[in-house]
Length: 607
Image (tube, rainbow, N blue to C red):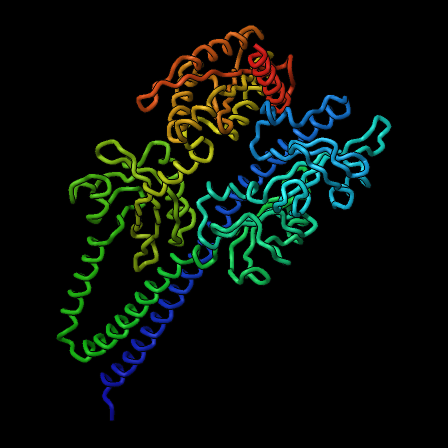
């Protein structure tokens, strides 16, 4: 018969084996949950990043089409007045955008009656855009799918505007054409990978422009990356495309509807590339889980052996205690045991090093005194929730700022867990602190870059519009005036073309510095694009003040520049607009300032 000790030992063996199996199951469940969570987080991060790129791409497309619409509208007005001369426009460089070099006017029969291309004879009567404008009363720019241009002989995207008589009857069209690549030049600034994709698609399902990697601006395909059913449900969003119908490459796609036009932009990044870091970590997690499983089973086997040998029990306990101390002190994250009142009972070496203290000097200090003052209240509330209100010992997580001994700030991801006594009360709290200072710095830099021009460091168009709207809100609230200056550099292109883009970039940086030092701290100077800048004058006493600032800036910008050992001379055309005299909102003020700038430029050219 088995003795009582043997029966008890047999039951203990079964219990130990079951516990080991449960721990191993828990390890693998936790591992796969972690893998799934990181996969979801990586996909969500890619969706967010692509959506930001889609927004930027949509803004570029919208600006391009708006610029084309303004040029076409001006050409239409000149044609109706009988003063249109497109050849002179091109010779005199009245068309400021380099991509709008092919502009033609066709009469009601489709025959070209004027064009920037001398001697062109063609008929557009059978073209889709001509039929659309003839049969529609629309007064907006129509963006046609790509065709072989009858003027250029190349693949072009025609953009047309209807010309109507005073009674509203059709009398012709103004047609401009750009290459598909002109819409996807954004690709060069987006830093996309080899199989990432940009796409411009109409709501008719036809692609206007598409670029894959370093490929051309249009890739022929009956299928599209953009799911129009989603576009009809929401003006922007994201999803995963399996690549069917295109090139078989799965992509994480973000799309955005182009304001005011039946067009959609889409950005797709390669799914495998975005998930590659997760796949690498997955292999690591699986190796760790396998190693942990082996350790658990070995631990169970050793425990069974130790149970059979009472003499080994004390030694096993000592070994476990040593393993715990090694894990605690050598952990890669800061760990502290804290009382319910916030007093540090114990802290590992990593926490001392993270905060700049010598080993052992943190014990007895208040954890709250180590935090930045603004974070202490939230930390105390979290302690209360975990120790007083809940009394369940649940874990909690938060991001906080701690102070090093030298006064610098350390951002940490702080995880709190409660350890209970045998009686069920909370004995102390375990706090794990992971240093996330680098991540926070990266987030701050990305937030700065999103609102500033990379070359000059000035606010970009988005921040300019935000500052202008704030200035307008303040002006309306307090009843004062504010102003907008629109600046275009004269002679910059010649410097850039003759000396190279590197010198042009340095010249733009010097222009930015002069503008920054020439305005008040409460005003804003921004780079709008190319050699165009704008200034928000938050408060002015009279319209004359706006003109005085413009004259001061013009004089400052016309002074010689020393760039890379060479002297460069440029000047500036500046237009001004004053709220509320010239406009009640940001759009109208910018438009008036832009018009005034062109008037200033024409006056100088006339001189």
